[in-house]
Image: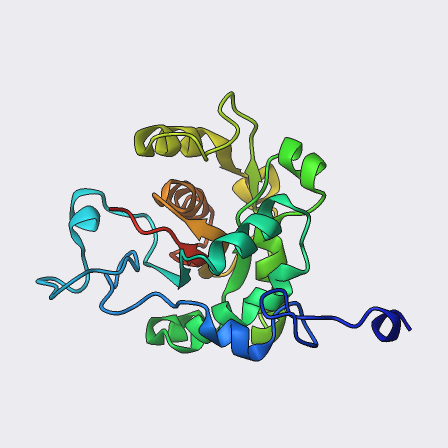
Amino acid sequence: MLHWLYPMTCRLCGEAATTALCPDCLAKLPRVPRPICLYCGAPVAGDLADAYHCHACKSKPRPFELARSALLTADSTMPLIHELKYKGASYLGAALTPALAELWQATPELAAYKQAAIVPVPLSRLHMQRRGYNQAEELAAPLAKKLGLPMAYPLQRVDTQADSQTRLSAAERLRNARLAYKPKPEYANGKKQLPEYVVLVDDVYTTGATVRACAAALKSLPGVKHVAVLTLLRVEKH
């Protein structure tokens, strides 16, 4: 009855749709172009002397095996991310998840992660109270369901003085993230265990500080040997 009284329309084009984004508009969102660094997933202009390590990766090794992002920042993507993250539009998570599923299928390296657990980057208690949901989980849960993989919640976000990463410099982001993301005690002491392969899911990759800290925390847990990172959006650094 609700759908009949208030038919769902696409957030971008306004046409009738079965989800918040119609297939045509979803397909038009800008994907991360190739070539990319096969380590961190950053788009790289021109030829790569080393396809597996961009300049940033050579100078700053990552604790994950690979990171990939589906979409680029653009006039069409940024409002969607802003609404998902700050405006209570949790429904956009399921509407945008097909872009992550498409990315998974297009990434041969993820073939080894067929028995992986999907782990969303945790939200702080303060942000959870304010928003009522974790935007990373809104992306991760539909992806896990589509792939037939289990969800796990082994990490916690510890409130720090600089609780938000948004206004911090790259060095400050990394320092704050290292303090903020920790394994939950039941995983740290081995009472609960993860499989050998873990896929970490988040909404945005900017400097990589958050996913680096989370990947390092995951790698510290018993049995975890491989961590891959999937994010919806990649913020290009100039």
